[in-house]
Length: 210
Image (cartoon, rainbow, N blue to C red):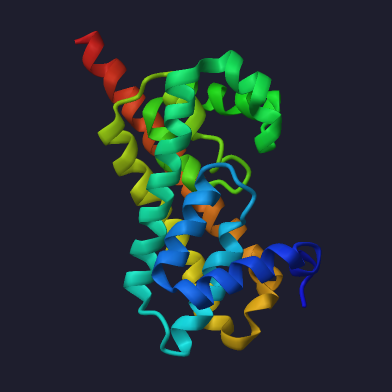
């Protein structure tokens, strides 16, 4: 068993029990928790579910859609926390959801730098994917646009880990061995986004000069 699963053994047991007993609704429920800042790692949810694809329990496309739908629901909950209660509330009560001030400040800086597109990119970044919803809510980002970006980003993330689970099969708990591939994919996504953002800004400046 990998180090990750040894540390999170009670969480792993909870995740596998929920999914084994509830099927797709269980996946949706767990992904809602993951995106609503409850410490249920999506990596565990998806690699185990990916393994169940190999047993015929799940169909891959349906699994990815279920997980992404759950992500959107959970992210909207977090979005509304930022929208309705504000920054001071988050800083005061965030500790109960494992939110530290530097988490919020870092995601706020990303939002200020990249704008609402960060709601897409943020779903691909392991360190901030859960917290990125807060600055989006604080900034009163358009909810429809936010939901679309969240769904697309989540679908990419969920596809990656579902595929890993399928490839690992019954050895799904060896996910640590695939961490390097995740880092490569994430790095490529970040580089692609930054390049796109720079090109967009240059074009915008060029149009403004005319």
